[in-house]
Length: 353
Image (cartoon, rainbow, N blue to C red; front, side, top):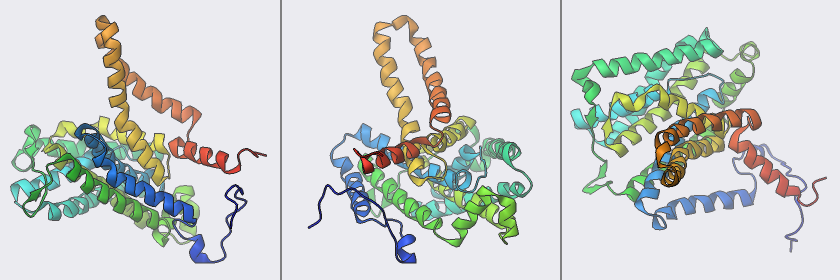
């Protein structure tokens, strides 16, 4: 019988399959299975408001994973996520509300169309890097929103469009828990795909492009192909997130996909950790719940300082920016790196030497 107090002294692999396994340690598999079970049991323990916040976190996590594939794993900066969310949301709205197609058809189509648009705006990435590429994606943000706002015959212009919740036969996903389960299942598929992507030839090519694109090209990696492919894969998941968000709020409007949304998603992967799937999820949860937590604090302080209500409301924006700056200064690795440090500390505790 193994001593439960024996500390871990190494994790050795004897086969290539073990080295490439997603979860190579049994206790990690059990931990992940336990987290998945807790996620499915969560609606039984929470009210509709909390379930709604969890649904928004799940949708944001899908989009953040998509953006991290592009920025964190491939090194291509994008500030047009808000517009790509809009492409996914409006595509699903047009297919379901205007053309009368099923949500289950519109959802993957929304992802594919957003991937096509993302690949189109990813073409300049062959010649542009860094700040110049960021400006190019920022141009995509304004171009897409301009088309959405002006093409009134298709998108409804600034008035937006009204959607319905998806349904399975006669059962409509109108309840908070049913839509939460839909978003959770899609999030799990997204996580599994992203984890396996970077165990494949394509994922390793993305990492090579990020680390040193000139060396990657010398090794035979087609920079144009993989950069555009990275934009397409990233935009696919962002489009899926946009379609899910559109059917959750049941409305799409150009104001919902402003540059502020793009900054929020960029903050998610910065706070969570670049190049980390776990970091994308943690960052999405943090940025989604930060305004809620600040709102509770502001409401509490407003009771004692009613004359400063406007100042307290402006403080929320200040706190949002301060959180990003503090993470960039003191923990550039993000929440994922903090969690890794905590795990490593307890692996050798109390014998840290």
